[in-house]
Length: 401
Image (tube, rainbow, N blue to C red; front, side, top):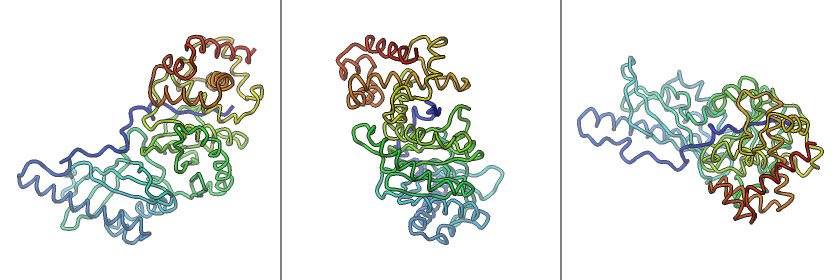
């Protein structure tokens, strides 16, 4: 079994994509000359950002660079090329606070900015990223630096920090670095096939407009979206607002035979999870079990690759509770595989008994509506959760025997 991860810390409690700066966040309430001057400077900076946004969408690289000092051009050229390769269809820059002077740098000011974007699909619900920009003041301010991403929940996006090459299909967008360019055609074909499966797990029929997949080399794995994932993680999905989850695969941690399963797994997270994440570690088994169900893609249970690890975990180390299955970040690979396998088997039992539609309704009630598992079980399955839990555990033990 290919292990993968979806740490709660990267999904729970995110600011919703439709959050707006408070009225007056940029405009000052006070009317003193210094505050008024800062507000007017911020307005001029925002006007420059609007010109830059229009140039990006128009494919005007010279116009995109024109707002900045030459020292910033190398970084901006890379950003521009990456965003155009990703087929950016919406790009909005909005100040989220007033400009403030940069200490020790006379004439320089920092402006916090929220960028909102769409890829491939026009008029999508925009994703968002928070950053800060640094400027030289003047009648026409000059952009000096776009600083590292300040989206603490998710870290830097790939297009902020890396050169990208991109392939786009009917349901997916797949991007990687130039060094891994030769992988793109195969990855796109695999992602398109996985998307067909993942679409069937979209809660409420709300399929992603495009699944966004980023294939990370060793350096990028440590840098994209903040890095720092558990060692056992082969891939993850991270919410970026607007109902979008972006999927990252670890090129160093994968073998060719496991990519199809992992893509089905991670794209199912993107299809099934709410943008605010799932409600706590007690539901980890359901979130990962559903994704593993998609990853297995209807294969017989006895062909599931993690059965050996399931057997070892059920023989010792597991207390028989589904709500305690989430492995620690430093857990050994065997423990991780066993936890994913038990989660899969529990979900598989519920699907076999009640069918995929009722299982997805149960998932929606627990993960999207955040109803207690016991209430959701009664409503969707018509049976007490205590009984169903014991049935799932008995099924796991029978398969592992």
